[in-house]
Length: 169
Image (tube, rainbow, N blue to C red; front, side, top):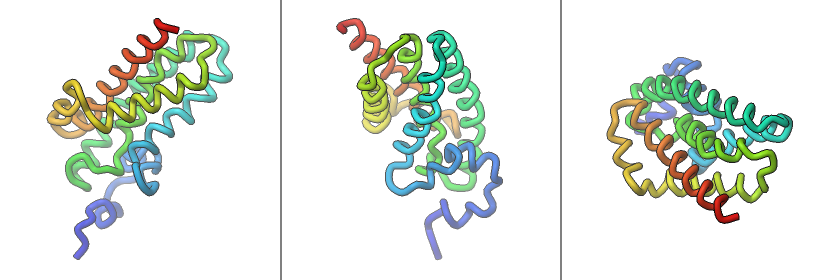
């Protein structure tokens, strides 16, 4: 009997919450699904950043996407826990939201150097993986709230570091 709940109960998991929880399936990619979820956020954000000439629009659209996907992802992650157990690795909607949050200050500048986008990605993943400064405590919240809250805080900490870096440039 298989103990891998991700694959054994996936066929019973409704499609809509499963697709939201896995960031439209990238959570199923091999190795480091959280990194794939964060990378998806960057890939979806880049066209907005590159093609929108108004920095305020980039900021507000990114903020709206983070809020909307946070609500949907919290719900879908709560559903995912019923099928796959507590904080399943394939559920990476939280990483997508956290990455969008970490990109917020970059959308407010007309020309952000590429290294800052990479820095935002690295900072977010480091905060998400190592969970310092109270991030780990956020995981204790129930259901999808705990799954989402630690990545939101990781994104916020990334913002602070990015703003500090930009104040010295």
